[in-house]
Image 1: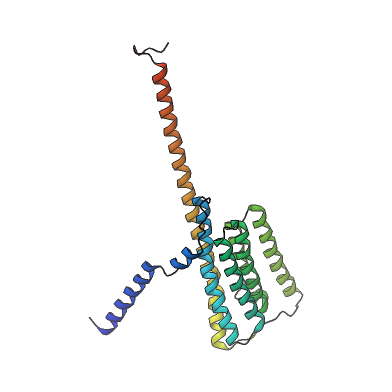
Image 2: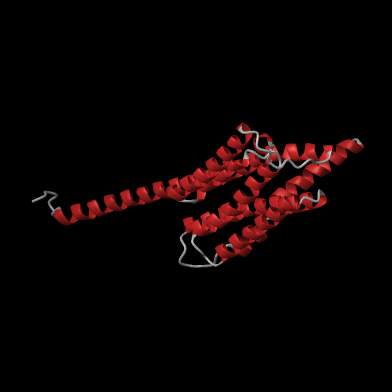
Length: 245
């Protein structure tokens, strides 16, 4: 085998080991609540938020270093806020605070930083303009219909504000980056919202599938109990001769 082939083979093996080890498992286990009164479904909701906070922390830490290197304080500050709210959400989960409250803190962190990124980098022309859609997907995944609709209205109002500013030629901040940084920002700006939204929908689909399977299992068990109960009643009502009086 050639040297390049050996290198590719080694890289594939390393990737498989990393996937199998799942480096986020200790983090998830650390913050998973230990409250015995919680149902399995509630614990799964908590763990789903924890999985997404991993990505939130990665985005936040990356953003802090990125905007620190570019010396742009407005975006560095909301990056730090994102990290703080991700950690706060994790701690609240650890102490079994209500799922919707933990989710609200999580969504707040993403929404503030997401809106600030598009605002500071050109408004409607920013490569970060897809983030409000990600926030809405989070809201409908974790919140009640009423709260999710509220988040959707907030994001819609923000986008309408950007549209009005563009129509009226109002000058929004448009931070100019070096060419290499601008190219990387354009790639991450378009791709990260798509990736995070996919993750949210992936975990949401897992939860829905688990809930459907649980409901089907409960229905099957209930049907089996009904059949057994009917058979017992039939035995009681049926005399030895086999004729029902």
